[in-house]
Image (cartoon, rainbow, N blue to C red; front, side, top):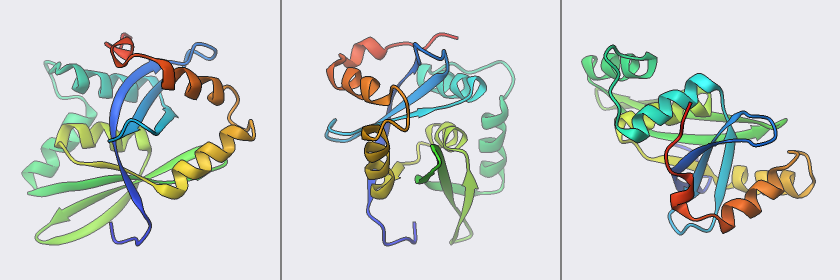
Amino acid sequence: MASAEELIRMEVKGLMMDPSSNVPIVILRDDENSRFLPIWIGIFEANAIALQLEGIEPPRPMTHDLMIGLLNHLETEIVSVVISALENNTFFARITVKLGGRESSVDSRPSDAIALALRAAAPIYVAATVLSKAATDSQAGQLGDEEKLKKWLEEIDPDDLGKYTM
């Protein structure tokens, strides 16, 4: 996290299916519950996130479990995950790792970064510019039904997100 940009700590609030496109959405929220960031993700990544959120351990390691196992074996720590950019309706992420006292950052899809962060109990951050741009894009209608989704998220009871089913 060498950037001087403001980062907002977020948590995974839950997973849901977009009712119009049937695509999984991971919902991030800030500590004050005042800001939400929905990110549309792939079905396999949604499953990886859901397994971790539900505390389900598969009989054999899934890809993200394998990655964490390799990182642990190499004594590499995931320091943090940052949703770092939003360009052309696509989110970008960085995973910061520490090996031998040296930190480095690698590019990642947000869904993979989130799945790894959950397994490593690493903090998830979103760049303030990403939250601002996501809100601006939503107001401009560039992300389709996101404004309706945000209104729904503001009104939903956290228990309604509940368990994610595949």
